[in-house]
Image (cartoon, rainbow, N blue to C red; front, side, top):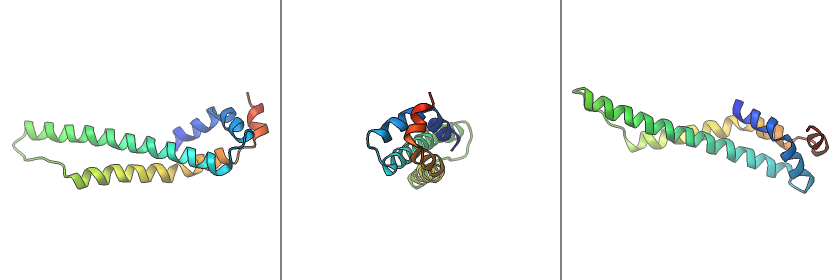
Length: 107
């Protein structure tokens, strides 16, 4: 959520300009929700790949049989996306509620 709040603050003028030329609150809300979800899914996928590498390394260095199931991979990335969606709500609402005039003046 923190990175999305920073994103909203840094892009205040962009949001104001989009609203001034006709973007609705829903357009802004959807944009930031999609961004939050994509960031979370990419982070989850990167973490999953690193985890798979770690499991493979552990399997190669120890006598234990280690592996990762496809279900676990899908679940990990899916949960990451859900968390991104959930924690993207507050920044997205904040961006959607910005007054375009105030946003454009905050240079």
